[in-house]
Length: 97
Image 1 (cartoon, rainbow, N blue to C red):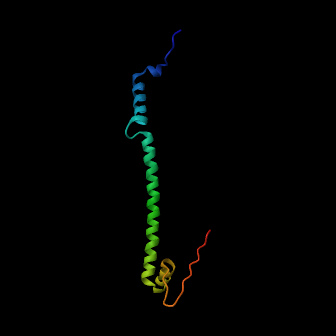
Image 2 (spheres, rainbow, N blue to C red; image 1 turned 90 degrees about the vertical axis):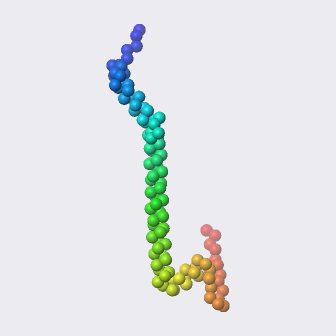
């Protein structure tokens, strides 16, 4: 009983193409797995870029507001740095939730 090999697997061009495809998908420096990891990292970096751009925009608006409005500057200093006026007491209430 002799095992019959399909004609497709006896074709040398098909075998070379198959070997090259396997090489490119798994063994090359820029293989499929590496490309997938790099794409994931690129998406993560883009999300971080968008986050930091939004933070910069928000902080720029706050800086502009603090430069133009003295009342906002005083409110920010009181809330953020617990500054107080002469003869004034500040009570800090910490919410434990």
